Image 1 (cartoon, helix red, strand yellow):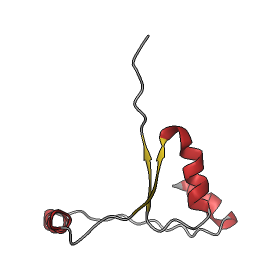
Image 2 (cartoon, rainbow, N blue to C red):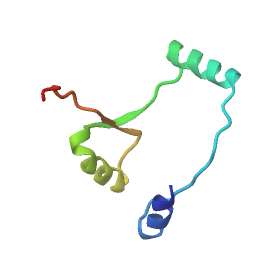
Image 3 (spheres, rainbow, N blue to C red):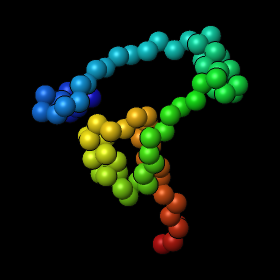
Amino acid sequence: MIGARLYSPFTRTNTAFFIAKVNQKDLTTLGELLSTGKLRPVIAKRFPLSEAPGAFRYLETGHARGKVIVTPESQSLTN
């Protein structure tokens, strides 16, 4: 968070921080909205973890109209 705050004056992106107070009633309501399809998360683009720098570059363009997802890549566990 500190790094983002220091970096923000040099970018076009505004940075704001807040702490949400989570309560059971709100989580239940969100769960119901999601399960009925009344609320759908908007995913702009997905990137594999190996392309995380590209995900940040995409965010910096300001064209993302939703969440940018970075997913872990499955790797074989051979030693």
